[in-house]
Length: 373
Image 1 (cartoon, rainbow, N blue to C red):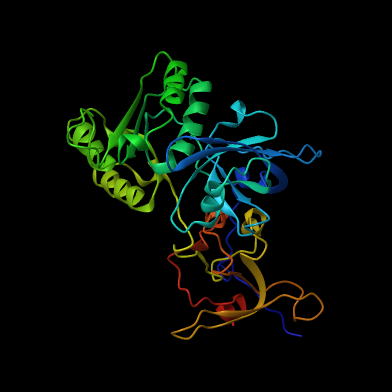
Image 2 (image 1 turned 90 degrees about the vertical axis):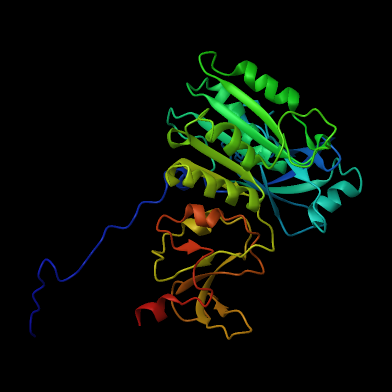
């Protein structure tokens, strides 16, 4: 038998990246619940409170800025909603969410159709990493539509913690009838650290010309003209939190980066839907840490597969799911996100410690065996 000597440079071994402990110790939980209350905030937005059944199960202790998925017996496909209150202000086992009526939206349509108080629900969470950072940088918050929910939760928590930071929050709506939560943000301002400044500005893009509303235009344009171009704020020294429709978030990110904000100082939460591209797992980057599996809110959105078959120009990839005792191998050879089952919550993207999951990856995915064979 011949021996083989390996030099120190023969193998390029790298340590496996460590998963984010915020996710590692915060596995998602699923609880049975009931729709406790429904409050109409304006013509197209409801505030709902979901109460988990007191069955001794571990509580869903989400951080301010995170979200959960909700589903009902009538609508089995879950929908993602941000927690609309900081957890320290919720009653035990209760969670508050905002639901905006969306044309063609099954969940919002069901909720607006009639009074659903008392309906059974299933809640899964907590999900997401859109949480308050630990720096002392001034905060810039920009939201549109029901994106105000997650910003409210963040700022409630920040006010309660008496963070030593200034904060400017710009909210964008179309008309005055879109506005709500005035009293809630007055309360946040009153509770803010007295040694620091809190400013809440509502910007309307389609308000009638006869109105005396002071702040008009697209919220991102108003931010640039009224604050950045005038030097009222220096976004190069701020931490930005953006939440709302993808066009608003994309415009804000582009503008802030051009103004000198570091990419690492911009956190955003886009309100995606089923029309958005599903993320893809690049199995050449996957290290089999299973972090994405621990945070998936839907059973079959991420599938452990024995084999993947490439797509043709008019089809999507097909796969054979692992069947213990029937498919070859003791463990999966690849992970695959099924776009038909994916609800576009992107919790897997945030949980992956190696950046192996992205909407930008090749949709004609490879299996691990293909990548190393």
